[in-house]
Amino acid sequence: MISAVNLSMRYGAQILFKPVNFQLNPGQHYGLVGANGAGKSTLIKILVGDTTPISGDVAVPSALKIGTLKQNQFMFDEVAIVDVVIMGKEKLWKALQEKEELLNHPHFTEAECEKLADLEKIIDDHNGYSANSEAANLLEGLGILGNVHEKPMRILSGGYKLRVLLAQVLFSKPDILILDEPTNHLDIHSIRWLEGYLKNFPGTLLISSHDRDFLNGVCNYILDLDHETVKIYKGNFEDFIGSKAEDRILKETQLEKQGKRRDDMQEFIDRFGAKASKARQAASKAKLVDKLNAEMDAIDLSPSSRIFPKLRFEQVRPPSQIVLKVNNLSKAFGEKQVLKDISFEIEKGERVALLGANGIGKSTLLEILMNHHQANGGEFQWGFATYPSYFPQDHKREVFGKINLLEWLSQHDPVAPEQKLREILARVLFSGDEVKKQVGVLSGGETARLILAKMMLQKHNILIFDEPTNHLDMEAIEALLEALDNYDGTVIFVSHNRHFVSQYATRVLELSNEGATDYKCTFAEYLAKREVDLLAANLKDRKKKEDKTEQKAVYQEQKTDRNAKSQQEKKQVQLEKKIQKLENDLKKVDEELSRPEFYTRLKPDQTATLRRKEQLDKELADAYADWEKI
Image 1: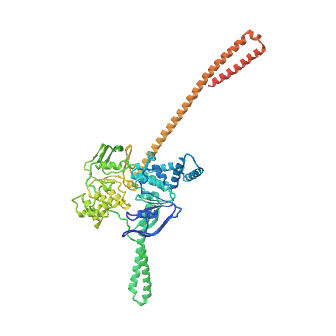
Image 2: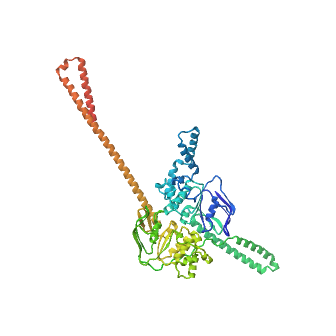
Image 3: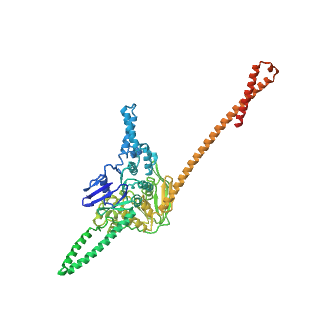
């Protein structure tokens, strides 16, 4: 359990939140929401002890462990990836290291034997003997394949390093887990895996995210940071939206009723306050008016800190039916093959989501289409009268320097009047003197909105977005979705935000190492079909394994049969030789018995020969019986 008591925080003149009180209870999952700049990340830093509030306290029972995502992704560069994950359990990792060091000693002292026994107990208590497999499962769920688990962390890009650190904090199994935008560097399938994992997390969870589908899937409470205060709503994000709207309506209704009652009493006071016969009554009503004014002042109807941009995209003219043809496009960076034989066509009006694992080449494909990279093989061709406008993932490539917002935007249409530029900037929440702000000091969200302003200014009939939601708050994402819904042109986009993809895509192109798989359907239908495809693939793999197992069993059976048959044949030959020998020996005995002189011998000699014949007859009968069995 975490208790926040009278927390206050400000930066300069900006108040993030004034004395707020709330409690996070054991086993509950909370989603932290609020507009960009409202103070979500600051509140998280206060809760985990990385930042000190101006006033107030955070109380956490000393026996409880808080887990949060480390930001220093370079401190483990020389450590094996799977070991970085296991380091999440500090006692276990220390015990494993000490045990390894002890086992390298040529001889054990009695004290070292006792120490080794203590270490074995610690390792067993922390499930150390299954640590590698558990860490591997976490890594694979987050899209890091097993063939790199033993390699040093430095081989990974920054985004994948953060995945390893996320696996580390999950492996630590904390009592309280606090995560700030954990989905930022995950692809859609890894996000789905993480959602399933966190849904079953037994402890207290606080998670900040701009992906409303993710919050809906994981959280049963919403912590709303809005207009300098914090309020907890029961339910997921969709429940929160409805409850907050109802709260506002109830407050407005209550304020209206109390206002009418106050006005009626004030009218009575104004009319009869001077009359002696009504003076006592008027004084009583005056006290009620003061009480009502105090109650009305306590009803907070401050405007929300959530502000929605007003986006609008208009295509310059309809293009040809086929707006883009891509044929066997390939791209490699050195020895690393990123794209291989990618082929597809896009028709006008389609809303195409490019999906696939991180690093598979989605951004590279868009960069090639916009001539920022050159392909190594294949070709692409834009259709007749196509005018693409591009939202790149790397904002700093476009927005940099000391020029102000107005000057930067005018570069993209030098003949546009200043009034039009100001109007577009106001639509993305830059108004008044803010348009004179230098572009180099903008935050990630502000830079993203400025690029959207550029796209509203340009002439286009194709919009291309590479991760547009990365730095946008929920309000900007909803505004972008609404603007795209009203757009008649073609849209090609990469996004890991499932709400964005599910609400907008009418077609999914999934990139993989084998090329591009085309799903001409919505995202929900794609997921269902993909799971069927994966199931079929798994069944096929299982069938292959079963066939291989069956073939192996048949081979073993045949081998056993062959061996048995060979043994039988060998035994048969041996028996036949034995029978032949016995028959020859018996023939000799019979010849001896048939001679007349046999009966002139001494009786003991006759008895021995007769016993010999009896023995040979029995052995021959047994040999024949064995031979018949074979």
